[in-house]
Length: 115
Length: 114
Image 1: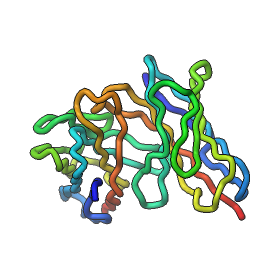
Image 2 (image 1 turned 30 degrees about the vertical axis):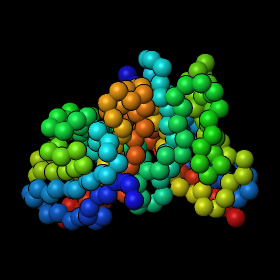
Image 3 (image 1 turned 120 degrees about the vertical axis):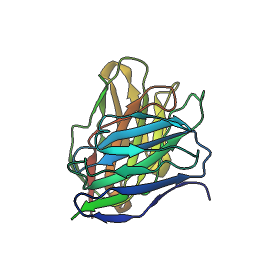
């Protein structure tokens, strides 16, 4: 069954801790994205990656880091430098280089709560 | 700069009534346009997309949207709403090339009353 998986579904963090959110896709997509969702603000792009071993900052990258060592995986680390990390985090992916489409498909999300 | 406006934060519709959710965008080139739906605590599901050609686009679950370039709009419609359509709906705009970011509207929450 093809798709995007995110884990865990719920995550609790103490202030000052780093946490890593997992995102895996078996759609053979080249591009992957991380979004943050807050009530009433839609989705805001944190980081995206068009190809393995390369990634770019989105609109709100401060306090976050990513890696793209494998095509299937794009983990997001929320660092202690992120001032307000409590939010719903969504991972997405889209098809290969040269495609005329930019359709992004989303995972089920991870809700992060800072205690 | 690219932007997407969904003027209605909340909409309440009676079951069986028609629905129109508004989306206006600002974009410098030919846009790709999308509508997504999100149930509480879930990810986003693609309803439909417009790339080119016929300006009336059909999607899943009986939804359709019409691209009007002159009005910079991409409104979502459904002729008869079902209780299961209650969710949050997001409009998004982006460039043609893959791997580039989409800009999302703030969303419209649809409530369906019986």
